[in-house]
Image (cartoon, rainbow, N blue to C red; front, side, top):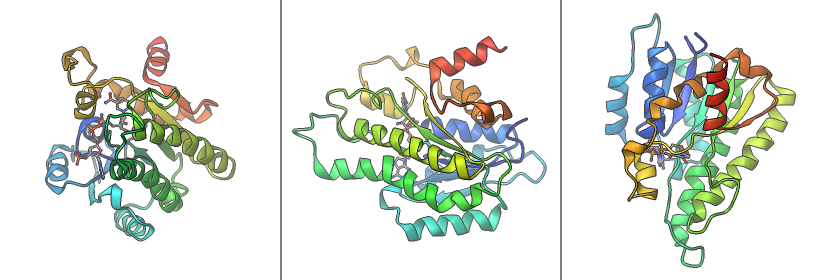
Length: 249
Ligand code: NDP
């Protein structure tokens, strides 16, 4: 099992896709580092994690990514290194939608918050935690993309711009890290998924027409699999990757 005994940080694991991944990864024997801003929700997810594998343990990191500084990231590094010898992966999953409005009307404080959570925090966390990733045997850095990361779309404002930024961040980290370290970098668009964020963006949509977060599991497992170590491609969309995985069945 590719994630057995691996220690994986999942940002935004108090809800939605991150929560589902944390629970499912723990069932497969991973040590989960939950990161979120709401301690009550984090405690609830912690209680749902599987603890049944030998020497399996999990950690909660309460942090508001909108407020993340270099110092706060250093504290996160210390907290993780006190519990785990290495860090096998980071899934940069946390994000906020911000305001859905035209750029002309876009509120500046909302713009700044979206940029901080969605783009600045993954940058600071990656550069701070890189030292722990490098010690792992097959480390993974997974960024989260979106359908509005490749083509600008009206009213998606800061969220869309932040995901364009993630594309650049992932490509630059890939170029810098894959030549000098064993860290493998991916940028994944999970596609339409039944979560609170999707419901906020599309309030008139019937959630039952959408896939559940659990259906993303095989894609995320593949990123941690040995097979993906040789992939020259770093950007994947859900439909493409799941078709590829199904065709290998
Ligand atoms: P949710 O809104 O359901 O979950 C987002 C998570 O991020 C929550 O745990 C939330 O915490 C956390 N978070 C938000 N702000 C902060 C912050 N300031 N500090 C720490 N944690 C924070 O979103 P999804 O699960 O839908 O989205 C997950 C990822 O997938 C995102 O990157 C999103 O852009 C991407 N995505 C989602 C799609 C979809 O259809 N759902 C489609 C394409 C991409 P809290 O519980 O406190 O709110």
